[in-house]
Image (cartoon, rainbow, N blue to C red; front, side, top):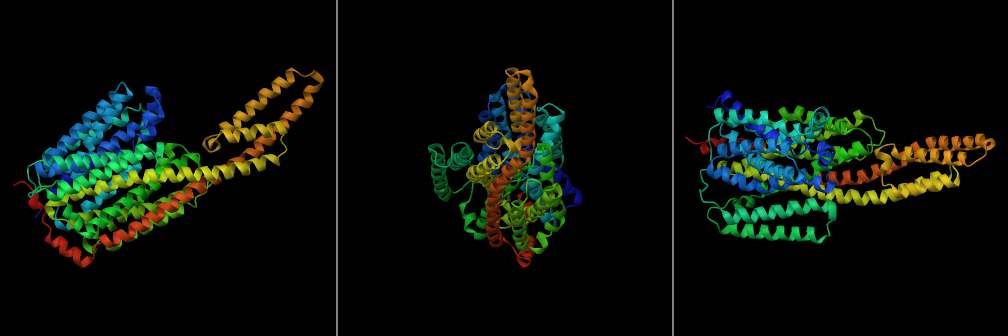
Length: 562
């Protein structure tokens, strides 16, 4: 019988590495403006600081899991931790943007050796009755680390140099390595051959690279561009070749027969929906809060963190899935997430922070009810020795869902934003036309509306620009006018300035309201996707009777090296 101490220390050790690796997917975001200024680079280049990590992470996941199952999970996990720490230091020391992008890719590769190995690594130490608690912990940490990333990154970059968002990984990584060395036993997939499946590894890596890279490019060049279409076609061809090779291979890296289990297949589809839903909330809401509500990125991160608090509060209940079954936990989680996402569409530009926090906590409750049951179900629906590959697929499906989500959501938002901006500008022009402004000022304002996209919602620079122009014009007119006309000229310009100051809040509200409408449509789409996820969660779910049978038959310890 495994003692509490025997499984708690491995859980803590693995959790440190897990949290660190997933935190780095979002911790960099807030610091990008500082990094851009430091290297004097462009926005297009700086986006690769994030994209290189995500691509390397997604592409290497399945290969890393296979190597861990073949050659030792503890071994691969430790290599990943050491590589992550070293690459983090190198990221901070990088003297060029090219080197930073390279080391971020190595970081992503290392993260792929850490994240999917965590659960199978600790399950060999975990009593059967605690499997739900342990899988719940890692499932919830995936959501919490993603949500906390912008907040932690903002606090670090505001109080220290941006390099410390990488250096902070050093003490965490060293502690994790030492704990893993001392408290974790080596484990394998005893059915896995030592023979490397080169064709499977190459074809799935090409397929995943083409898919993730293509989806990341959608936001820049659109769905119909030759680059994106070529990537998607290449990904499909790579996947077909992978399936062909794996079905004929005696020792495949991914046993395709796992997907003959419709519950396992449905679980992975549910994860794709979850990835899209999470991006709808955590990716779009960050932009919404900073753009429409006009708050800082750190404040936005703190508000988004409220969903993580709700997730942690629901954890004890979600962990009961290993006793009560995953069926209604998962379905309830998706429905709650869907309701929360739908309600986000009704948040106005002048909404109180507490109303936003309340809705985000509904989303957080949904997340907490999804992660644990879904991860438990996927692991229990495969043989014990395949827990590693199941955990890897869990992460791959989530990453692909997130990439698909960003691609679809950005295109949708851009389309809706264009339509709403046209309507907003027409309303603003009507508002200006009926104002007391002079014809000259009216024309200048209308011209500014045409030149600006949504600058009004970002700051007050539009108002200041107009006031500065009026002040400059007043000086010119006064300079070229006789002294006896100065009083009348000043009076006329004072009226203009006062009218603009009174008019601008109304114009700003029109712009913000229309931007809110654009986001509302996208949030509704996210809500629909999560309802679809609820259907697949139902098909994937395990009822209480079958759950007792699964837990009773599980023996993860068979994978432990004796």
